[in-house]
Image (tube, rainbow, N blue to C red; front, side):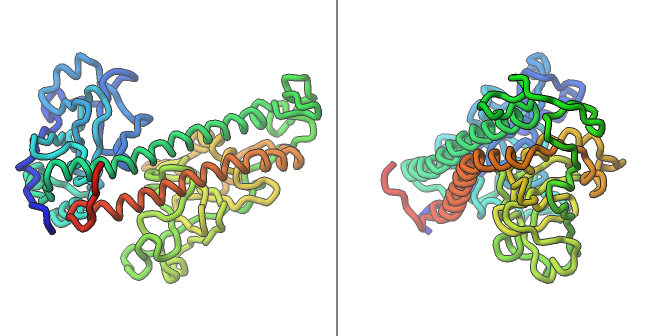
Length: 422
């Protein structure tokens, strides 16, 4: 290795969140204001703004520490190790489980961000694990982590190269989000508002298409449509988990049967599920209640939490936190996927449980739906095929780009691979 290695504490300063009497709690949260970031908001190197809490300017001014500026690196000391993000906000407050890491003049900020996301950096944290269920580091331990320190020129080259990959991934995410919006709008327009094209190409309901009262649904639906239940959409499949005490039941990701957990879907960047953090083996599948589902099945979490949804990109199975559907041919994957997304608020309402809410297979299967005519389903499938394919292609490219970045990252860090020019 040609690079000098130094301790993180020699090239950075650190600032914890305010842990005193002014630390924000639930009653201080507002709908707008200064973002209050915790570890759960950091997913795949980004902040999930849909989950953010906010505090007022007044509350922010009372904090004695934990005030992050744009570009500061936020690192999670507890929970899932390796949660690291560049703060995108002009100013933000951090939870006590996070620490602000600020580089000095010896190290490039973007280079440091990628170092702290590298496997050998995360491995040092795992080696300092105190043996509890969750990783729990201190700033003093973090300061002792060893990192490679090439020349500033090389740091900037490495950061520029890796950032270029990330920008391409971000651009693909924007494209996918636009396509997802188009797919949702089309479903809503046709199957919620009932303004699918009539025989003259005009919006059905808005143009006076005949609506009939349905006693079961307690609403009007287009003539020729029927009421039904979720299980009409296809085969409802439950999942299972083999004994976690048997190592032979589990395998490294991509080396066994793809196996989804709710946590895997929480970290999923897109609609298609390939592999989670771990696979299960033939023995693990045999010794659980899990079932292998074909490509194109729709996964839906029905506990802890209710409502994560994905489509299998290949054969896969799930743990017991799912009720999934192998779509019937006449409905197809896209219609089932959008229908379950539309039903998510209803599924969350019917969940029961004291520790956490759960939807049983029977309750899941018996939720009411509207069943369109077969001809309209065929038209919808044909129209959405190209959209779904483009979404899949952009996500697959992102999977490949992410794998490339993660493969090159440690080799760039230790000098095995060099970037010539920027």
